[in-house]
Image (cartoon, rainbow, N blue to C red; front, side):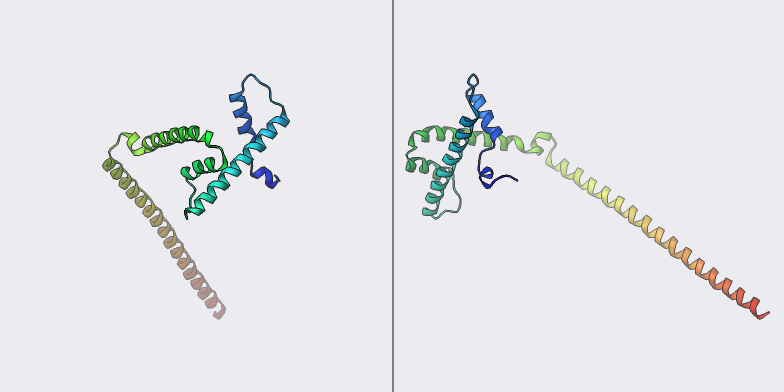
Length: 168
C-alpha cells in the first residue's frame, strides 16, 4: 500500500516524461528527480493553499484561475503570472475547440429529427421483442399449467380406478 505522502505527489512517470521532454540530452540522477518531484508537489501545495485562502476571503466556494493568479502575486511569484495567463488562454482555446468538436450529433452528419426517428424505431423494436419474449413465457407457463392439470386429472382418475379394484 502506498504511503499517504505518495498519494499527494505528481506521478513519477509523468515527472520523468516532463524531464525527458524538457532536458532530452541531459541525464538526471534519481535523487535529483526525487527532489524535483518534491519541490513541484510543495509548490502546488503552496499555491493551491494560498489560492484557497484568497477564495475564502472572497467568500467563494470554488477556486478559479483568478485566485491562482492572485496567489502567484501574493507569494512573490508574480514573474510566473504572465506565462500562467498565456497557458490559461491556450487551455481555454483548446477546451473551446474540444467542445465544438465533441458533439457527436453534429459529427454524424445526420439531422437530429432523423436520429430521433431512428431512436423511436429502435425503442419500438425493443418493445416488440420484449412483448414476444413475455408472450412466449406466458404460453410456456400456460402449457405447464395445462400439463399439471392433466396430470392431476389422470392421478385422480387412476386413484379412482384403483379404488374400484379394491371394491371388486
